[in-house]
Length: 315
Image (spheres, rainbow, N blue to C red):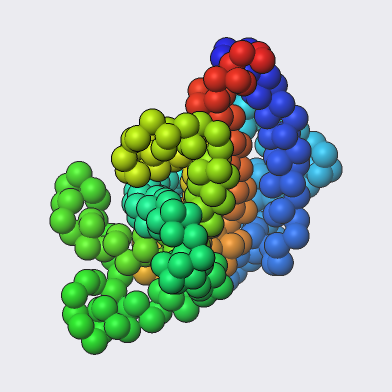
């Protein structure tokens, strides 16, 4: 197991290096000059020269990258040009919000998608199977921003059941936190639930045709024991590994949802940073998102080995 983790970490190093290059070059693609915005309306030439020298913008781009990478390896992601606050502090402030939203969305997706996939596989070609596939197709097709707006109009504006926006910390006010997070989490969970449903159904169909399932039925086990104890247990491997990868997507894909529901997380942070040309914040958020996605890929690999005895034997 340790050898697998070591190999994956070694593979992650060049990946992160390539990501860092793209993240750094990202600032060159953004329109505008952050120094002009930072200098204010006067834009005194001496002030502009001082700021460009301070942020090393007069150096060749390769040296700018080397200096930035050196600071990054020391854990310094730079200073926000707009708030003059360390980017690391901003990320540590916003990251728990996005993680809270992503965890709740993942729980909803698994609670909806996995049982629906099992039921669709057991009742193959029935009305339940057809309905589950149609709902899954709708979940993959409906845009998140449209679904979010429709939920706000229906649940918040017309029915008044839940707040249309806002955020509350989970540990300080759990009830308020659930009220503000349930709609955006549901919006985020719909495509994930659809994906999990289709993969669970496919894995279960393969498992239910296996010899060990026929043997279990021949022993006189109940349908529940056959489906859950033998079929689903062996179909769980691709579902669990897929869930880990989907959680990595959640951390990176909550931008529109957080904007719609005014949630002060990673998504809103990067959108505000792009509009304000706050390159240091954009670089820090994108880099942390890439690290999180690579970490979830590592978790998926580890889970695959833990759940598959044949992999452990082969290694």
